[in-house]
Amino acid sequence: RPIIVVAAQGLLAVGVAIMFGGNPVVTVLAFLAAALAALTQFGLARARVPFFFSQITAAAVLTLFASLAPALAGTGLPGAADARPSVIVASAIVLMLAGLTVVGAAQDAIDGFALTASGRILELTTQTLGVVIGILVGLQVASLIGLTVDPPSEALPLGAIPLQFLGAALIAVSVAVING
Image (cartoon, rainbow, N blue to C red; front, side, top):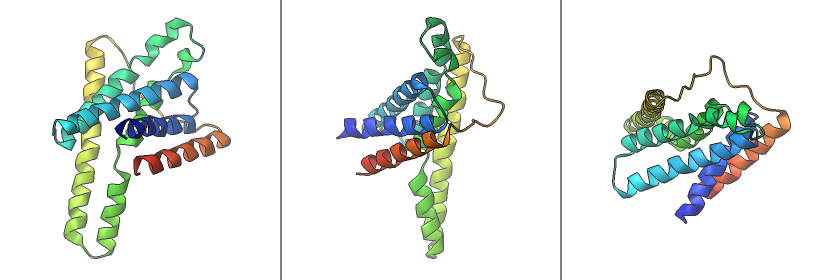
């Protein structure tokens, strides 16, 4: 079962990459980055590492993996020159962010459970902070080993409308499998 969940997490990232108009190289790299991040988190959870540190580590791993994408440009692989690390990272970040925590916090706040809602919001903030710190660590380590990844200066453009629908459908199926 864990391998099915990891594969579904990779497919979720593929859905996001497709929504952003990622080419086949980007979608494969997004799948691999997300699967690697998910496996990292799975291993750290088995070792009972707190989730905050698991988020940091997984985000650093996926950022380092994505920073390898520009190196593929010299391989002659079709579409490799257009591989954008930002799409790969964004795809895996969607996987790592806590959507259900937001829903739970909102429901608790609406139902009048202010303390529980506050706790969930703190949990959401901590998880998101872990992702941000992990990306920064990944970018710093990539820089130290000579891989230069410039953060995008503008918002990522979405792909064509049919691709957005395809990506959304893939995300929906993936979330259904992940949540069992």
